[in-house]
Length: 397
View 1 (cartoon, rainbow, N blue to C red):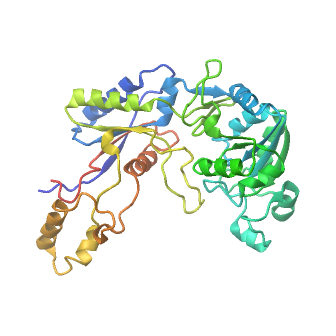
View 2: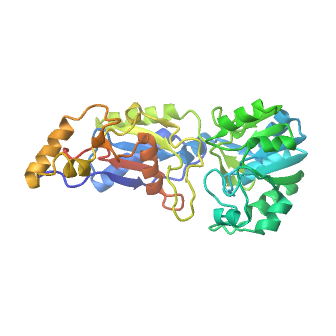
View 3: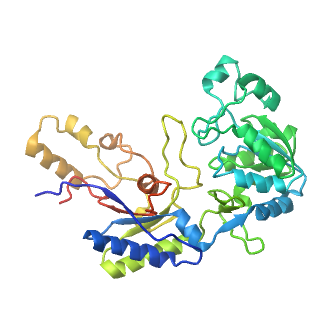
């Protein structure tokens, strides 16, 4: 009988990871023990993935508020810094802001509106329309923002992020001024020294500011990109992808992940005889239709992965074939015709109508999203995900 089950994604429980733990050994042994306990056989092209958090924890990749302050002070001179386009997050940005403010005399905080880069809304588009505000043209002071919109709180967290961020800056010893704009050049009316905190648009923002006459332009990826007094760091991403660890420290995005995934793949092959793909994943890449939040606050979904996860899906759309090319067939005849079509498909289906509607995204982004949803971000205790059948198709027996 043909196989009736396709892709299966399993969360695998693991010990609580501490600094200095052997992450390669822990991930490998956890998956092997899970397979033994549940009597699951390994197959070629299974995928084993682990959250970026456990890799960073094992590395001890942490930085303190004081580390951040020292780096900002050294790079900006300790005077006025324009901090633009941060996301609205207690977990992702609040501690970073404390460190930034502690390293400067004054912070001019420029918030994008009506929402931040990942979809956290300060106000609604309807509210902007009601007051005839054009977010691409109008620069609002804090006083004008309050006059128009009052004290809006985030739908899910109940936090007024404008008030919260202003209080963090002042409590850290810096003067605070807040404006609202979406054109990066608006900050240059207040200071020529700018720290741009956007994630996925940072290269464009830096280019615009430099062309417009800014004197010092750095991104969060250039803060904590080297160790300070033994701190953690990330040479590629700096503070991007960091999360709150304690009230005074952040866990940085993990570094040197490729050696980790390659070592795990090698150990799993030695133990199982199967070629298993391995990746490290952070946020998934999907959007919540209710809260309008785009999940991806990490700089990338997957900082490292084995070679078999490179590229995009190359799949035929079965319902397109059934409704068009094979519309006259049914039952076993339709099944066999589609199987033959799959066996004969081109190695590159880009632009072909028969692949229209398949998801045009990187494999690592798709798989990372599946992993993020499987492992969750709370107390499931499954920071490792084991996926089987992802690369199967309708012809797999």
